[in-house]
Length: 149
Image 1 (cartoon, one colour):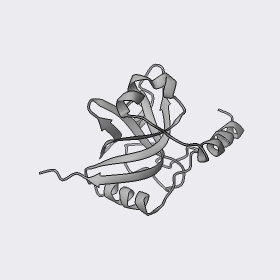
Image 2 (cartoon, rainbow, N blue to C red):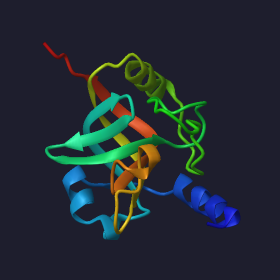
Image 3 (cartoon, rainbow, N blue to C red):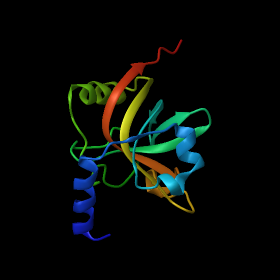
């Protein structure tokens, strides 16, 4: 994709109002929601080569927008630097969220970001093998730790 187009798109997203939608709605209508700024909620799963937002049986890959030095998960090879033109808002809420993720806490979250979908897949995640959809995170509105016994 043309870099000038990416910069233009990133500027447009910065002022856009997100659409509130469930994860089920996103995964049921990926083409209609592709490229849209959305706000959605679910449980965050993070471990080696996994960073996903899930609700019921619907899961999408998560990635940080640009700004942080690395993604919060690790994988065997490749660059972990967030390079998407969508800028992540690194406020105090995000910093607490990121610390919880990096300490492998279980949590649920509501976040805003750009939804991307591919027609045939999977095409996102580690080596493009994890998911047919992703959310590039722009901001975290709230999160709750889940206490697992």
